[in-house]
Image (cartoon, rainbow, N blue to C red; front, side, top):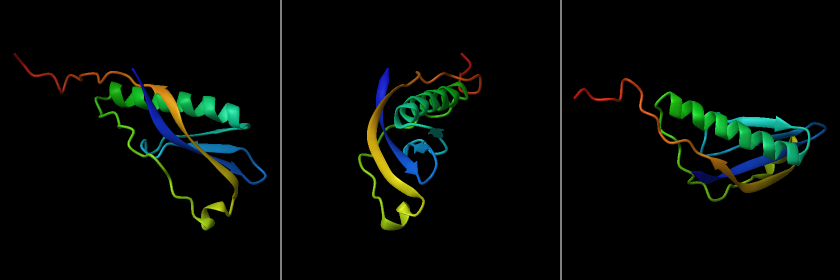
Length: 102
């Protein structure tokens, strides 16, 4: 199954790109070009979601549809790119703690 997560890429001044997904806290990545950043962010999201599933954690649902960028957000950033990124989402796996005895 795939889902579309909103991602925010920032072109850092005198540096590379960084990326994050507001609906998946803690999942970030970086890349030298925007194309590389998109690939790295897809990989980071898929790995992050797979780890959550393996640990029996809930997979976040994509809910964010827009972001607010304020003037102070541009202090260390040349520009932002916001897009929906289609990623593979694993099925929720049961852990031994979540299986009930018969």
